[in-house]
Length: 67
Image 1 (cartoon, rainbow, N blue to C red):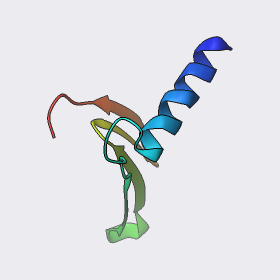
Image 2: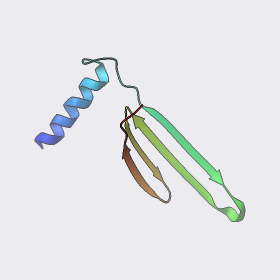
Image 3: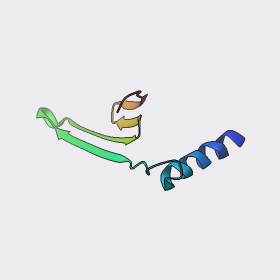
């Protein structure tokens, strides 16, 4: 429970820009249709160097070091 509160507090500080410029999330979506009625969809979110995404095939989470 304490860890969850610490993470929420850190995200709130990053969002309001106390330690620097605010971090703005980037969101992207993809929907594609192929032959034979195959449809795939996905969504991704990036906040700073943290990326998370989900498709109809699975979920992925990544952390990067660069910009």
